[in-house]
Image (cartoon, rainbow, N blue to C red; front, side, top):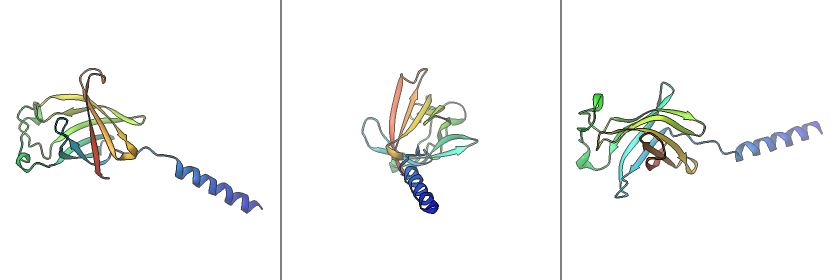
Length: 147
């Protein structure tokens, strides 16, 4: 009798665990989408470095733009090739989201504060760049390519 109760309890516990939804990680490769055209622009790989998340452009999808340089960028980013550039950095986990990071727009060279959160069980990533308060800014939704 004891074994039957123990097996039943273990089975219920396993069932509860399997139905519990764990937050998906933003680590992996994401396809960025152009705000105006809706076309895919690049692949960005999100990785962890020193306990914080960063994102690097690993591929620009338009062959004519693969040699683009960040002419408008300032500091260390100025003159860097966009493909291979770290465009997102210092993202810290805060609850189910990531915040306190920075993101650069390689076309304008402007650096914004950034936050991000994983959506749709890890299939999408909402990335928001803003100045000052998060309410004043712009969001993009990236699509997962692989983990």
